[in-house]
Length: 418
Image 1 (cartoon, rainbow, N blue to C red):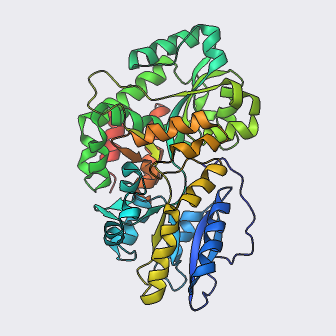
Image 2 (cartoon, rainbow, N blue to C red; image 1 turned 180 degrees about the horizontal axis):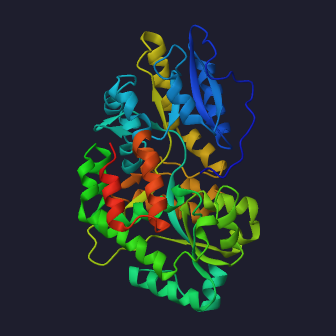
Image 3 (spheres, helix red, strand yellow; image 1 turned 45 degrees about the vertical axis):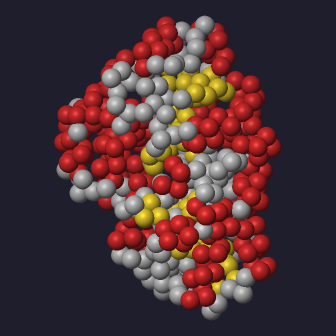
């Protein structure tokens, strides 16, 4: 899902190598943002007796490597994750440090992050992660040139959105770009629709282990709404063969073949890298609209709130104290400024003034305000749920979009997941 290219590790060891005594092995997902974590390690090591060693793990297969290592002697001491389901199994096995007491007693740390972001690092209402990267909400992007040509405005309501489907079909433009070969892009639609129809509480029940919540009427209504959008031609006729990772959907959108694109906030960086002129002049953004009679707060957001540092419970004494001090560096002003310089939007409170230095300040401030004002920020379901549920869920969603499952069959298939 990350648009940035993978970088080569800079002198770090590989996962699974024997850890030297008196050091912290810190695992991070290796991409264009890793340079901020490199600087964090360099700064930390200047003053700490226990030194941190950054291990940059290639993004492809990161979670598999992480899961394989946890519970073994080669497990990382501090590691990058997505919160929620990505660490829930480790919490169940008591592999992680409960950071709640540490955060509660440190007022500066407690107030450092936006509440909706910090809450996303919780498992069983306890904090197991410190936010350490930029926010990644899902945003409704639109092509300004296509809208202007059609005399259209971004949707402010669900009826507006449906009207735009008809408007752009008449213009010979696909209303929404959709990379149907990558099921996680379809998941974004399901997440927002369920949130707007039933509220964030419905998925929270599912995330908390209540599989019967898949039978909530809001889930069926969500599936029926997806089917309605497909039947209306909202995604065109060929979406099942369009990809995201090879820039398929994004290129269609940038070239005016599609009018809108529901995608993670990284879409801006993706367009900046591949269609620079469009990113700077033709790319617009707005929020996902409310649905009629929906119970969800229209200010709610879905996506990846951020990434987190978690600490292994195997650490004791000075090493544990050092690990706790290391993860706190993500709350410091210089760290937030480094994220901004790298094109990210930090999750720390009161960062608005820093965003003037962002490569795209208006877009950065839009994201920041969106997340700051969100009553709830739901973590992407494929990260929030355990892997044994997330994988078949994505398959079922893809079948729903491809009309291989009816809305009722989709609900039954989801209720059967354990």
